Length: 356
Image 1 (tube, one colour):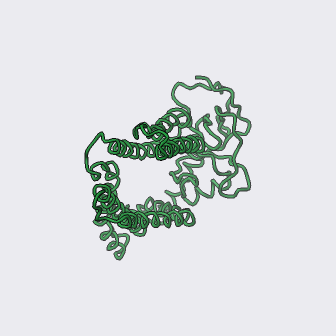
Image 2 (cartoon, helix red, strand yellow):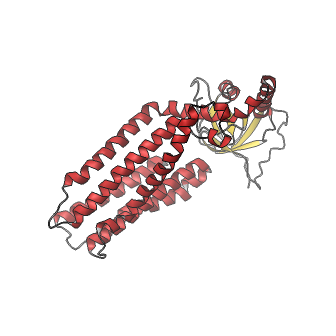
Image 3 (cartoon, one colour):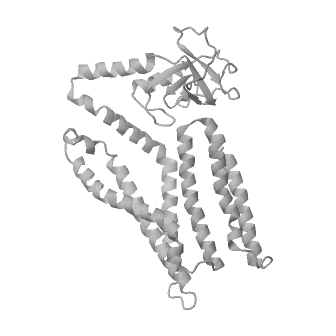
């Protein structure tokens, strides 16, 4: 799905660049700038079409949220292109500072986040020096100070660079006759912001997995924080109860396969004709999607994935690795969601018995 979206958007951007080159070369001097931005607007329609077709068929809330976030970012991009094209066509006489208002919105959001973190971060750093057990529960659930510091630094630096870039660029465009602002005055903040984002991307690429793993372990420690006030025997008993409920709790009779490594519980009104299913069987029957192959375990990469982790529905581990993950009270290795139940997939399941 992402590959198809990228191909469509690249084609539309090439069309947009071709129209710009045609306009600059003088081949179409009467071509309106607003007509030239039509390929840019079509990117939003591509995203919405895929959101309501391919992504909807996945029935995966995580993918749906990701596409909706991309839709919101593209809408701001399209609003900016619309007002810029209207300004270039002479349809509006606003100053460039006002024309850039869609671009000021994310800058304002970054400023608000930086201000909030400026209030939270000192309190969190002070609490690090105190006894962890005496911290209030509300503040104990905060993210690690390192993550807060990195987020605050990124929001502050990016918002400052973006603010000066837009302000200097607007002044440069408004003063076309006697410009007091040189091109370097607005390209320098842009270069610094791009360099910072490139460094952050490199850091996330090489060290992002370990950072996510540490954050997940922090969340697990927070979930276990309530057990510090009880005895070790009681904490061990609660841990065994949790593991027993995850591994041996009441299993669904059937799961619906919606992708190579994604499953879901059956919806209300779906019938599968599985009257011959043994209720004492350790396996869960699978129906639905029949075009994929079983994926390898992403933990050991040695055996096939044969378990489904609920409620996220990812089939990403073999039984031994899933048991180790659950015994370690770790989240789903694929999406970091809490594991409520672990079920075994029936290898003899058929894919043609689903009935609406």
